[in-house]
Image 1 (cartoon, rainbow over the protein chains, first blue to last red):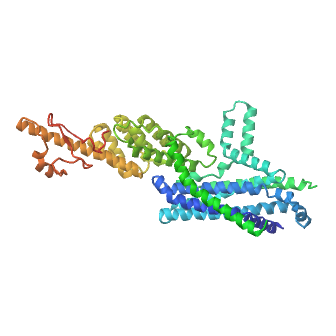
Image 2 (cartoon, each protein chain N blue to C red; image 1 turned 180 degrees about the horizontal axis):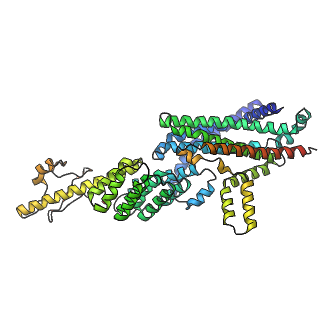
Image 3 (cartoon, rainbow over the protein chains, first blue to last red; image 1 turned 180 degrees about the vertical axis):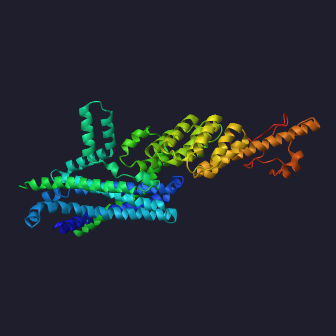
Length: 257
Length: 299
């Protein structure tokens, strides 16, 4: 399998694109927030640091997933470097998967550094270890799973569409993914069988990002339940498999002439 | 382009940036001087918690924190501008919507319910405070402190039966301290007494984690102490009248009694209220009241 060279090259390209510089901004914001929040929040500083840190992880990670992800395949096609790549003994599916895992590696490092920043900020604020720092770990893991799904979505669109359209569609799916509860509510409230069927179908087919979002409860020190983490992991793996399979299928049939 | 020209261009660009930045400060001051203070009054851009929840796209926790901090800054700003004074008429109208949004986004934001229970009830609308706390209880049925605040709010409205019911409901929550039952009983027996008030205030003070709530409770306890002191002083003036046929012109005749009863006195022998202001004596009818500039709560 030629995944590793493509993945490591994709990672190096991200670093060269100065993607990881967002960590500098994040670190500055976190330090500033740690100092100021105590004065503005009436003793809710630890909660706000967790909300802020995990939300930043999700926001920055989503932006990286979308803006880098939409260019993963398109850039190679645009620069025509895909021809020389595929002339080598590299299968098209290896190319797609290598690109995917390369960006996932970038996101993993990005998320790990942000998580470390949040934990250090909490250690400073709370003058030692406690439950809140432990609760942050599964929540950060679930955010990473959400970023894996977002990356797969961006890669799918990148395999057949232009960057502008890919970014638009990816953002739309991000938004819809956070409104899926409303889709189900619409289905429940509808009296028409067809409307019900459409709403439920969309609810189950479209990604449901609320499966991964436990930032608010984590900020109150509640640890995400183990069975929820397992369920979300399996959901993410299945969803990513579907999206990557679709991307591979589209890319396999693509004529580069 | 020659190297010399490029270098000259760089120096010119650097100079433009430096001069430009340096001139911004006096220019801004000039503009502000001529346009006056155009600070916009605090505004609520989205009045509904549900609307904000929909728009927050998974960042509900962070947005609720922002609204919590806005509520704190709004209340603090208005308080510093004299909003807590008796004659200010300030009703802190945006406090309830801000806390409603914060708790809609994060239904487990207990400190927001507690803050609302205390200050919305006191300065805006007890009914809205009750609505907020009841919503908090619906989302957090295992938080006995919310029942405590509900009972406290009903007690302030002099609805002692409802206060009793709230304290009793709270006493049944696992982990609720024994005083909840005691206070429930006290509500029915002596709901309007100062002793009950002291008990209720002390429990809120001990259980609350919010510094602002604790400060407010301390102010209320000081008011109770002031009321007790004024009652005592008026008993003295009445006793003086019975002995001499007239009310005293000052507190000097009572100096020894006041010292024995641990009153702090000023240089003229006038007893001081818990905030250090001398009480006012009306020699026409023997009544004692707070000094006009006293910071003791009047309500």
